[in-house]
Image 1 (cartoon, rainbow, N blue to C red):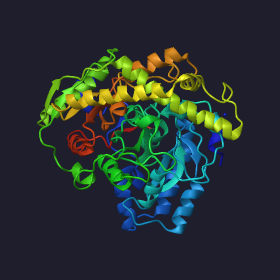
Image 2 (image 1 turned 90 degrees about the vertical axis):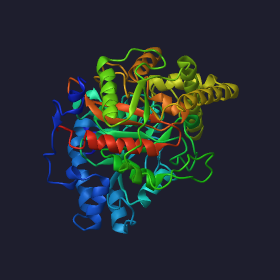
Image 3 (image 1 turned 90 degrees about the horizontal axis):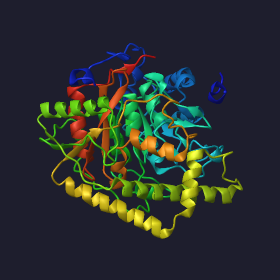
Image 4 (image 1 turned 120 degrees about the horizontal axis):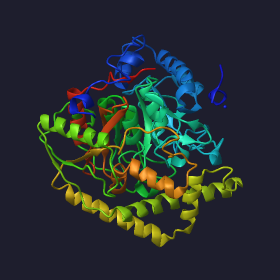
Amino acid sequence: MMSRRDLIATGAAAAALAPAAGVMAAPVRSGSPLDTHDALGLADLVRQRQVSASELLEEAILRTEALNPRFNFMAQEHYDLGRAAIAAGLPEGPFSGVPWLVKDLNTTIAGEVTENGSRFYKGDRASVTSEIVTRAQKAGFVVFGKTTAPEFGLSASTENKLQGDTRNPWNPAHIAGGSSGGAAVAVAAGVLPAAHATDGGGSIRIPASCCGLFGLKPSRGRIPMGPTRTEGWGGLSVHHAITRSVRDSAAIMDATHGVELGSRYAAPTPEGTFLSYVDKAPRPLRIALMLTPASGSPVDAEAVEAARAAARLCEALGHYVEEAAPKLDAAAIGVASFVLSASSIAADLLDRAKATGLVPGPDNLEAITLAFFGYGQQTTGMDFARANNTLQTAAVEVARFMQSYDLILSPTLAAPPLELGRINLSPDVDFAQWGQRIAVFSPFAQLANLTGQPAMSVPLATSASGLPMGAMFMARYGDEATLFQLAGQLEKAAPWADKRPRL
């Protein structure tokens, strides 16, 4: 069999919530449990011995080999690692025997390659296993590969010069979103029901929206980032998952959350499990509908209608919705986030250059990364401190605003999934042009990263062209419980599990 590297050389509310062109009203590939069960359901089948972990893994591998040449979602194949884990005996966890993919971005498996979507890290083997991977394995997940990401997770489209372009299974001419695009494609294409993802500026919610999936970004400090460091990009980045079902997301959080050694902080834990909230209808919530981003950039009419349709659905479920938004200095917080991410990237690149003798440049880094690298080298400790202070001020402002509201509802993205190439979110464009375009395409998602709050993209809408569109809800810091309650309620009211791309 050829290796992956060889193969690669809404309308109205009713329309927003109903199947459209490119959507299967019910699964037609019913021969495998991968088509009919979420991750918790698969684990139940394994416990009941109706299917084996080996059978699930081999089916996931077959699907990977069949679909990856079309959509390019795999960065590394670790098939033998998964087979060896099963042969050694899996722990009896909530996901025992369920196939799992890890994102190829700052998430390591000892002895295996982590390349961060970059030629600068090509072939780099890790000496330690990330705590999030260890906890997933203890929960019984079977790791069999890593998914694609743009270089260092810097783009809202999963494209890089090491592995190529990741394509949306709803329409391969369109982006899958980023930076967890590979994870979203693997789930949307039916390879597995859930996959690991990270989010430093929308990187869970953006691909979830583009691919018709549920994606929740946890509160800062909820999920471990270590062991080598316990925060990423000055606290902007977090780990979790992209899933098809809400309950999988909650159960994965139950299995992976909690304080890790050396952590500076941890998000407050609710009473009971996160999973226990999914079937609890929330009390009537006060929801602020935010249709204009803090930057004032334009929002496509379909994206506005998707958020309005979600608002109408929430009102029908007994919640109170009104248009309102916190007042923020978009320019100041944008610069602050750039200081934190650019200085972090520059430090990592210089450390690797010193350790390997590699010279950072256009032969091994993409144009956008080089711009971050150049800027990061010019920042000072005072710049970093002031940027951190700016974001803390914004977090306080948003927290004060949310004393009057339980949630903020907005479009996840300012437009439906855009075409590969035409939108020029690719790493080859001029840096100023790239920054302007990515800010216009995704002006809502980063706020949750800047303030540390949890947020979720819920797949409630379909564009006129048949592409998925998400609605985003942001909760108070530490209040994932309310998000899971509302998500469970929305999932019952407007089910999306059977809406799948035609492959």
